[in-house]
Length: 156
Image 1 (tube, rainbow, N blue to C red):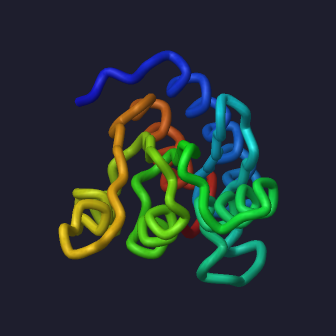
Image 2: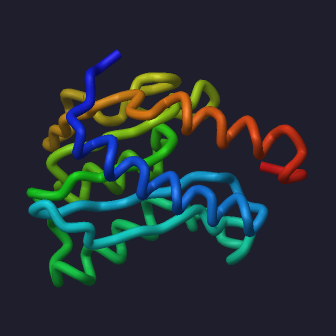
Image 3: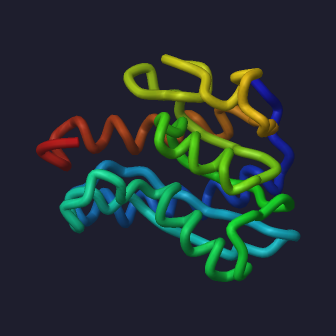
């Protein structure tokens, strides 16, 4: 387990606030925050059920917001914070965005694409590299996911 710097915990707490919003709207409680040069430039939560869109994951929505805020498709100084390990779609999008780092909370043993099930982020055949910090505030992130699966939400 990595020891997270304090700013990583601070920004992960912001992502957890987003995840709470997803839970309140009966979606999977996942939140994402993107930070560039010490400033939050994007915040999002999972909206798959709300939008009836299988691509409306927190990380994807946040990447779109960040690209619009920076007015570019590349964000080489950005750090992406997500409360759960990204899936293959999200991990690929994070790589394609050119982000510097990915920080996530809970591992995803069913669909995680940063080492749990597969590892999209360290495939040597790809031309992108990404620093990853795992399990930041993992206990809080897991607790929110358990809360959702315990009946607060009927389907995740």
